[in-house]
Image (cartoon, rainbow over all chains, first blue to last red):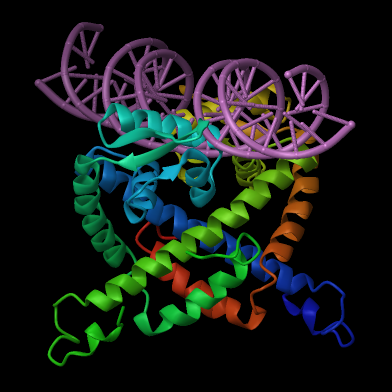
Length: 166
Length: 166
DNA sequence: CGAATATATTTCAAGCATAAAATTTTTATG
DNA sequence: CATAAAAATTTTATGCTTGAAATATATTCG
């Protein structure tokens, strides 16, 4: 399987598709996916054994930790980029566990605000510290001086998704 | 928020943790996750509207396409890095749809081999072509000359997961 | 006002994913 | 050979995820 297809004159710089570049991007995507899944699997295991919780629960808590006054359900699903129904289920369980409270919104009986409880804030702080340490270990193969460069490449991929105020 | 915490003499090169590097890795991880989720969401939508199928089904078919003689259930879950029970469910549905067949293994009545049908192979070929084109579009923000470099960084992250033959 | 439309959320059905328990068959060993 | 241990797979319980339908409330405008 030769990789030389791209070398033909008259193809580079035109709108014509480059088969070798396409294969290279495909391989890159598979690696990106593999690296991400690996880290996610480790994090899931760590959250499970260390805190008896899950990554999606942590994500919800992280979003709410920064916004002390809480977020409406729709804002939460928008920030986390998951469906409304998904957030409903995760929030239900977190409320059952005393980590979140639902607060009615004045002048709009359709909406609810969701906020971390004191216990929820404390639990999050402990988990966030561990989370950062886990990431630090899992990504320690990456040269820190490369981080900026790598970040920019990744921004290019995600750029169409949002205005990215992350 | 200053990024200068790492610049203190006596900390670099020691076993002492570097807080700024840790934060940088955390931000990098969040970007990696965002980029991956974005591409995955686009692919899911494309598979759904274009072929009325899903990414996990495609993954199973892709693994089996390369191995014409088929794979045992346990080999499949090992290659795809998902649980045995997960593979059972996906394979069940693919068999129902005539895409896969289960074949008994000689001399071991515990095991089953799973193989693509002719229809399955044909469907996969069509989907794989579209898949590659979708990836090409989704990753076109990445300079192809960067691909090799980026790949190496990603290998560093996933390195502990397996001997990595893809 | 009242009907149509829009918005916020939940419910539902289906599928994906895991970990742990159960089942079936094979292999090892006393 | 019989029983114990190991291996391959399925089943079960639980939770995440989506898209679509349903519900409830708000808003618009004729």
